[in-house]
Length: 340
Image (tube, rainbow, N blue to C red; front, side, top):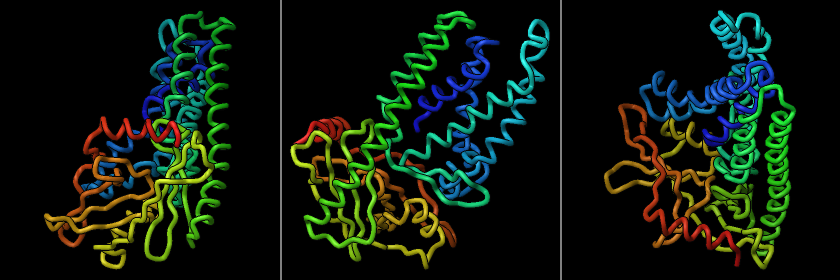
């Protein structure tokens, strides 16, 4: 999920392991551990000169179970050496620090697995991307109550039972909400299947996921032989069927056979994608897994990669979400979320 959420969850791990021994410093070290896997964005940029390779490195090895184990032992040993001195001598053990970093590193990719982006949890042994698609990459209803509980517990003595109570409350509320999103996902999948059946759409596969910042408005995409059929459904809709249907013809200005980079990007997008030729003789790669956004000129893909030929390979310009009119799009999202 987003960086703030991972910081909050990492801080909670730190508090659970070492809060009674070192107080608020445990929150800080846990937050650091919860941030480390996402540093693969910067590591990828250092390792690769090609922007596609750098992007595909994200949520790879540094989000794996193996990295969590190796990183926990290394960071646990290093932090214990640096912290265990002076007045702090013998206040903590290396085992304490190893546990803190294991949980903060391990819970990070586990949480990411619930989002649509996909996480290579088993790298380097498998490049399978785990994605349950039940919560958006940023959802305030998951993060805000959790964050508030952690802020409150900071004002209590490290040995106070109230501190432990607020920690459990934060974890409990966020976990309950996550469970609710899973039930929503199961229900919405059923609604989407029935909607496709009602419209007589013959499809090979489909995917659903919530729109950004909420778990009420959902997006569905179904693949047919020649096109993708996409629609939206809000839990507040009067009818329990998807609507706002759009037909997106499959466009392949570049193919997997021509470029391995297209093959890799298609893997990244779980094969829900289009490639279009632009006026500048470059290419626009559209990742259609993610919800289309409503603009003044109709629905458009937001996760677009601008590709260009770079020798015998493809490269891309730095990614930036494309919003023609952010205020209009957010207003349209809110109006659709409230139901029809």
